[in-house]
Length: 525
Image 1 (cartoon, helix red, strand yellow):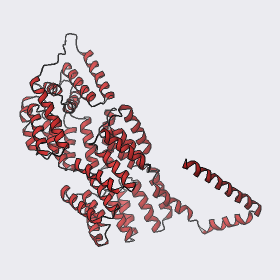
Image 2 (image 1 turned 90 degrees about the vertical axis):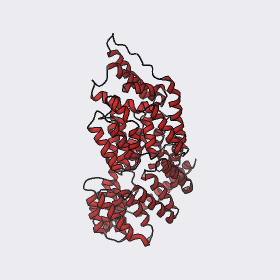
Image 3 (image 1 turned 180 degrees about the vertical axis):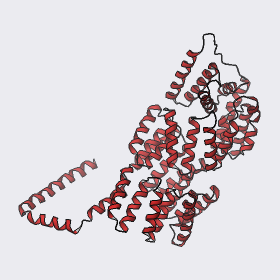
Image 4 (image 1 turned 30 degrees about the horizontal axis):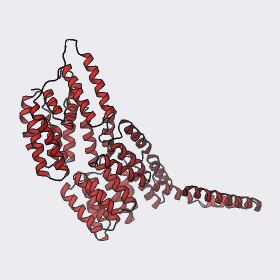
């Protein structure tokens, strides 16, 4: 029994998500080594992959893969026969049923029966990769999961990568982002799985979780170039673009995703991010709710809706959404950040402190958890020194971690240590460019009377994010502070202007007021 037979049996069993994942990896291997599978086998892989995409309602992508399958079939010699094998139909209904049961138990929070059902799927279909991910997500040890696939790895050719793949995703589901990134990078670079879209998407997501937004965006862009019909992960990509102020790119991404499929949560979330960062919170709320209707397990949709509710002052409703996001993704720090922001917004500092300490203990002492705990400590005058210690530890681990730099700058501003803050910000900006950092550096430069360079920093910040209101306010404030020479010259001009012209100006003001009244009236309609 070869690996294609395993794909066939899973397809017959209705294990579509497993077929999609495995066939994607095998097709990547085939592209990197065309001699790995026969033309007939590659044709079958393309068909199985297209079928799984069709089942997931990714119709544009399915059409693309079906077209490739037809081209592959034409390339076969006239004597070749493409005959689907007949698998063990007896196990077909049971495997499907077990996969559905496992997912339903997991969604209901019933871990033990979910684990049992996933294991039964693997017993019948040992290459059911989505079932493997399900077990890892339920805290089953990677070694135990790997033992369940050992026989198939030893008997089926070209599966030497599978044990490393399991190890990588075991790290993912334990929240060990650094080791997960290193393992997937080694898998992606040193094997036949180079340029696999699923692995690139996982890398992008891991970099995002680790707070490395720059590399996350790069990996998402690489995956998108390889697969123009890619939907998975594009909600996170859109969120990152929106945070960077690239709203035009976000809008274009949303339009492209809607053209691919409007039956998935991702395009609605991307459009919601555009609305949220355009300060249209009611629309962001609606789009987030629509995304949740399509996929109640969409963490990014829950975060979007929660953030919109929080900014609209509906904090208690927002808390419910952030808690659900935490239940679905307990290793994602941004879920906890959203909940803690809600606690701080409602002056529930004690609850925020408890949550931050729990995250610190659960996810470990890294730059992100240290900064999150420091953020809460900054809210209480009693814990200011603790905040300083935590931030120093965070910046020792990662000197370029933007959130830690921002919070340390906030602390230095309170202490009026502007020169120290300027040195901190210049160091952080040496190898990266970020709107918030440039804006804060501008604020510090104003405090030490370095007005021209402050203006330059505000300009850079606005070039990175034209919608950054605080940078715009800083620049406008500086422009209003005129030098004495300019003020004297304006007074001289006023003296030269006669009283007749003053009357014209007054009339102009009155006319402007009428237009303002009309605009206000139209705005109310």
